[in-house]
Length: 320
Image 1 (cartoon, helix red, strand yellow):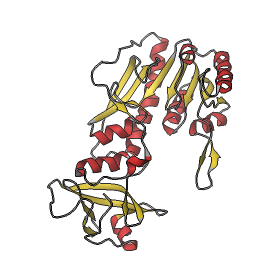
Image 2 (tube, one colour):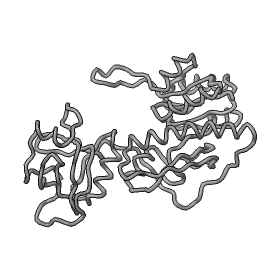
Image 3 (cartoon, one colour):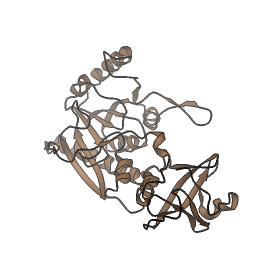
Image 4 (cartoon, helix red, strand yellow):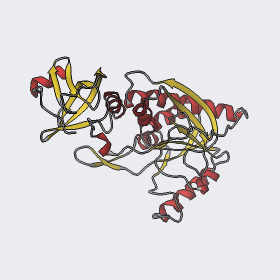
C-alpha cells in the first residue's frame, strides 16, 4: 500500500521498520520537531526521522496540525504534503500530536492507530506504565480506526500478552512495540482483502493513562510496599522512581516485597537494614527490599556495589 506514517519514538520506529520491510511504500513521514537532548542539549532527530532520512523518505515536522491553531503555517504546509501523497492509509504510532478531522479524512482508508493497551482500558498517553503501576495482569496492542475522540475509534485487531511479575516499563514497551509492528502489517494485509471488521469499543471499562509527570517519580513511603514496588518497575526507564536521602536524590531501579506485615515501630521510609542482599525500607504497610540503586551522576548499581561507595545504616530515613 501507499502509506503515510506518523510517529516519533522507538515504539513507532519498530512499526515503521516492519512496514518498510513488508514492502509497503511509505511516501511521507510525520514526526515531532527535533528536541534538545543529552548533556549538551543539542537538537536530536527522533528515531523515526532518522530512519526516514536513511531510507530517502520525505519528512515533515509540524509543530501543530490545526489550521486554526498556534502554528497555522505549519499545518497548511503539511496539509499540502499529505494531500499530494495520495495515500491509501495513514499509520499512527505514538506520534504526539492530535489529528484534526482534515487529517483523518485525507487518506483513502483513513488513519489506523497502533495503541499499546487493551482498549478501552488505558486510553491516552502512557498506557504501558499505567498498566504496570495499576497491577494489571495483562496488556496488549489494539489496532484502531481513528476518529475525532481520544483513542475512542473502532477496534480492528487485538492481541494480548501477560504482564510478568518482574515486568518493567522497558521490557513491556519492547514486547508491545514488536507486537504492534507485526499487528499493523497483518491489519494492512487483511484490509487489502476486505478482511477487517471494525468492532466498537465497549462502553464499560474505560480508563485513561495520563501522561507521566516527573513529579510522580518521587516515592511516597506512606503507600503500601506492593504499590511502591509496581511504581519502581513502571517508571523504569523513565522517569525513574526516586527518593531523597538527606540532601541527595537516589533513584531506585529494582525492588522486592520483603514483607507485607505492618511495622509500627518504624516510620515509613526508614532503612531497617542494608547489606549486599538489598536495602530494606519500611513502607506505610510492609517492607520493601531495594536491590538496585543509583546516585545522581552515577551508574545503576546492585545493592552490594552501591553500598561499597555509599554506606547506608539502619535508622537513616528516605524523605516521605
